[in-house]
Image 1 (tube, rainbow, N blue to C red):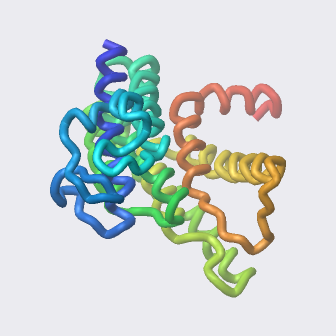
Image 2: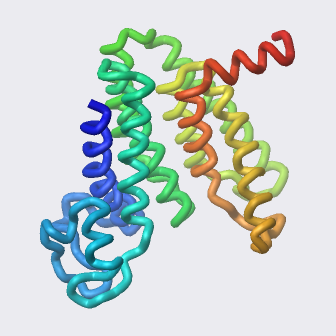
Length: 253
């Protein structure tokens, strides 16, 4: 069953590549078949086999020989692995009606924000609605999830508003506020607070690693915060209980 989840993730990962490419470029998802962005040739089914097509084509378009970015097989493999992990943690249960759309939202949102520094609300709305249906079916307690959305929105709105006052301009994207509300709708109150804090630590770690690799980041330079939020939400969804237990053990809270 785990392999089925993995293969299902590979296939969906191929579709997510289309979403990641088209949405920020104002193209509809249903706009024709997949095509090479360089030469415009419509791709055949044999060109779209997840991961394998990229390998056998040697990372080049069959028609114009333009290089195919490693991002495409990476997203496919990542989605497959995430779906497999979701099965390991939650099994073949209604919980995966909650978490598979949620993890899909995190993957798509992280890559779009990394590339374009924009949060696509269409992805948040669709995936959140599907996940919330899962919450209802799994009888997780609707009130706690709605409160999680409200708290997630409130925490990051305060950050957004405070940053705007401090810098006299929009220094923290409002899309991140909406993203945290969507995360809160799925994770509930406690894990939303944990994700909110963990995201800042992860962003700091990424900045330190980037500087260690020799890339300079200026004080007022804009950086995508969405990927840090998405990674934090994924970690919290899987290990929130353990992290909270460790916190209580250390601080006696």
